[in-house]
Amino acid sequence: MVKFPEATARLFKNVFVCRKCASKVHAPNMAVIQGKVKCRRCKKKVLRPIKRK
Image 1 (cartoon, rainbow, N blue to C red):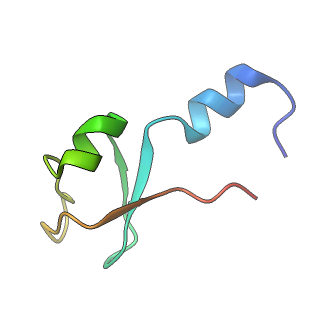
Image 2: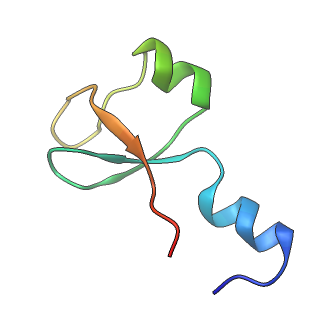
Image 3: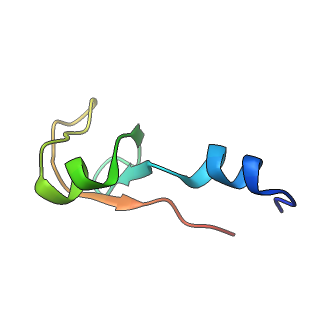
């Protein structure tokens, strides 16, 4: 899908998906691991990394 590293970083770096409502959240990795980031839509703290196809 993505051929060059700049596009890969833009699409997949620091992008997470809410496990409940599936909305995208852009946040630093450490903030998500520590539980400081919430979903904007449903206010849950359960996020996963975006899948690379």
